[in-house]
Length: 60
Image (cartoon, rainbow, N blue to C red; front, side):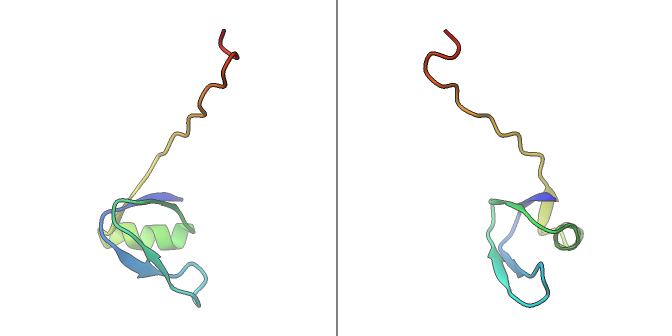
């Protein structure tokens, strides 16, 4: 699940290693971790749309 962090917190997707999730950054994390962050008010679900820049000459 894609999330956008509202505050900085540590979390673990595998139950062993901690990772720092920084405020105002987007992350793709396991659904269980995402739901935990969202439930605590630390993150919101993010719906990113990636746009590839046009290569020179393709649109001409």
